[in-house]
Image 1 (tube, rainbow, N blue to C red):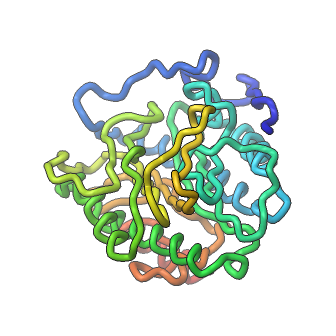
Image 2 (image 1 turned 180 degrees about the vertical axis):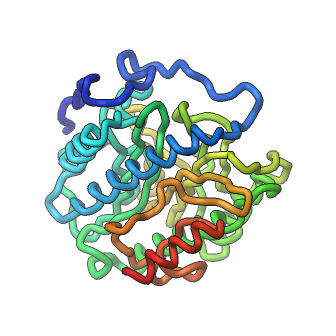
Image 3 (image 1 turned 45 degrees about the vertical axis):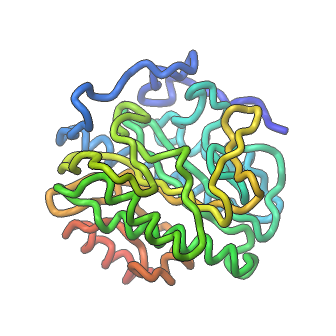
Length: 321
């Protein structure tokens, strides 16, 4: 069962997205391919990314046995409003809640409900906020009861998903073809016995929730265009224990695996810089360090990007944790 959709008082947020009232997004992305964000847009997106991170951390701290995803949604909704932000998923193409919570075999777009979380569940919480005209989008995994409550297979699924994602993030820089992203993800997970979802993809983001480019999380054997400084997009692979074919529920949103195998996912909003890439939704001083970060085979500790600035900030943050 689900509770009614939560309402937003327009006077308590800086601005409403164009779909807030009727559920129909109207604004399109740039007509000349992948947008290169202006300096002013980047400043606003850093703010929306920071807000999304703060809200995601608040949601993650609530994950515990007996807590419902609806209660997490209520906290997310309140945290967005407190920051003057609109919770982007709410009424986007009629989505009824303020965040997505995808538990165990749910691949993505799970609708928060009143089922209590159980020890050993894995849950992806996907947060997007709309602050001052720009979206910030991120998601990560949480384990109900902590690492000790999760079986070895579940730990390996999350670790492999994280490290495949991190492998792709490390390669993002100007001049690289977008097709490199999916190839490195598939090359990482396939020898380890996992599958990558092809039905959903990452996306450009800015003043529009979803725009060019599409970011594929599997090998595409053709050029997809070169990454440029100023591009902003998400990478968000969905990796499955077994088959990656989605089964769509009647709610038109929830996608689960067809065989009941578990699925995991991570996501950042990324800004391409002259010297690499930065996570606009990267972790902050109060964020927790998760076991998959501490035990990563790709790069241990919190990842904030590959630019000189991002590496420096990550070093400072990791030394304080």
